[in-house]
Image (cartoon, rainbow, N blue to C red; front, side, top):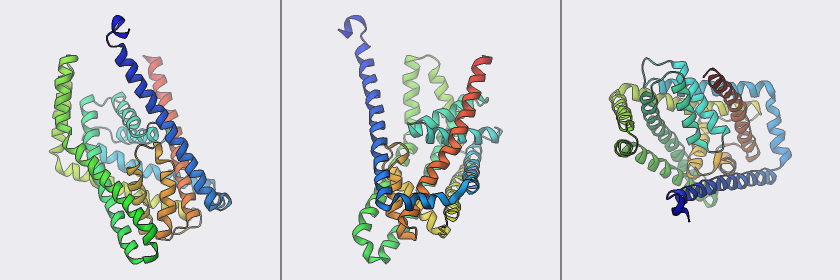
Length: 343
């Protein structure tokens, strides 16, 4: 029936069906994650968790949320370092919008990357430069994440070796962390070694279907090769990403001190790196809802952070993401509306 009127209609319906299933899957994962989070809070005690969370207050929460701007500045400057001559503010703002879209929109990383590219191009960055720089920046970021998570994995192994009574519950945790680390390694290898072949393949396909697209992809490949030849800038980008991860741990220290839970910076960095490792293993769950909270409950006590305080920290992080992400998205939408009106 489809072929009689439109030979491609069946394929479109099938694609739409897959998209619908993806939406249903994301919603189901979110609902399950929320249920797990509520169950964890209930097991520890709502009064205990929200009692600790309530200590932070509006002023200290504002300080904690503002620290995110420092982290975003490091990330934006690392990205801009790969494109000398471009505006630093433009890249810091694009990175801010990338994180905001990732935290606020339902489909995580991909939505954030699309929004960041749109911001760059709207502010006058040439498309080949924008596309090539985000590929190289993502490569440097993945390597920095790998170093960060490896630090946490080694620290967890040392702690489990020193605490025999944690072995029964600790070894499954170590297995999960190792799985997350393995997933990170796999992503890095695929992302790093598949870039050139995929761009070449896309150029051949694009040249067949859309005249002019092959030349555009060749520009991206040329720009990317030029960026990778700037070794010192790549190293600088990697170091700024690593600094951003350490600064993220420092931000958690700010939140913990605000709720009356002073934990040494080195312990918090280990906790945060392991949280990210476990979230990597569950990358299909939007925002790692439920996974992040469960990881805090499992990991926190090993490094001197009680379960109720760990859950309070997780909730504070989610509140911070919304407090920074929603205003940023609104500002971006206002700018988009003005551009449409002027156009």
